[in-house]
Length: 411
Image 1: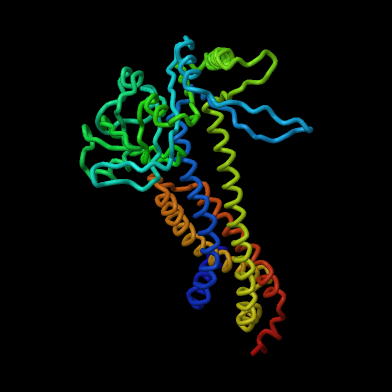
Image 2: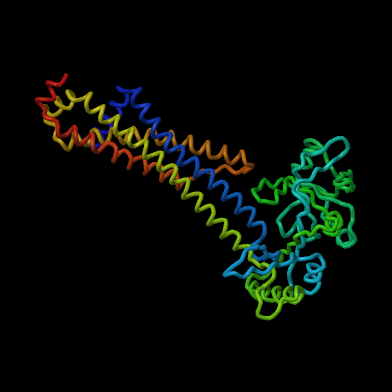
């Protein structure tokens, strides 16, 4: 009996014991579904995050306030750093003469309630102040309207740009918000633009954001300190280190950092954010693979138990095959291939379900791309074959050792 005949025999055995085979394959399918589903969702998240980070541009860096830990080290309390002030950020933009684009922004709140007429949002709107360079550096495109004009930023014009989802909440589907008025904290703003849908996982949540001029945001803060963030875009990537060095020197001078002391602010390349996110998604992927592996381990044990029951039920069949000249090797091949066939059938179903569930999870968290994880599909099939080999070998070995005479007497 050659390999092809063993595979056909395995399929006939699956058909003859359809309910048991379906339940066995279902065990494997659940394991593969968990493995492929989790990893598909993670791949979707990674794709969305990379798309968001790529909008920042590979040739940019951020300057922002240093986080104060407020803890003591070796009995000495760490220095407390003051946040970057608006006048310091504006001085930096004025003094930084390197050929670059500089965006200035500050998040006013993420719990804003914005109103238009009788309509109002939930208190979950992100209100951010910025200058006119914020949209291009962040890779934000306008669906309609225009960006801030320089004089509106400098003189605190009461104008606003709405995120796609925010506009839909206040105005409904398909209605333009341009030249209408929205209010926030008792101040009215003329809507001059609406952003295209971003659908990103970024913490900024651009779709539910209202962007106002930075001066107005400072006024609305009412004395409360805002954390101002500068994002510098460089046209020539070969000049990145030089530009960062110049920016560091200028900001240290503005912040009056003493010689020998560390920076009182953070300066970070945008690509380092991508690397950090890659390390996070790698950890998630490892965890997802671990969960799927544990599930498959349980499935392999259940499959081995079912195969052992199958060997017992088919003792007479094994005796007949041996009496007709089947060697122990052929008997082992038959049961191992049967286990692999069941695993592969379950694996195919699990892969399809995993891709579907993983993409549904991605869609639920506003990731519009449909991910087909070819690598994890291949891994899933290899895992199925390995599980079939491991789970089927011991029952197959046991069947090959049966005495044909005793097997024929088995009732």
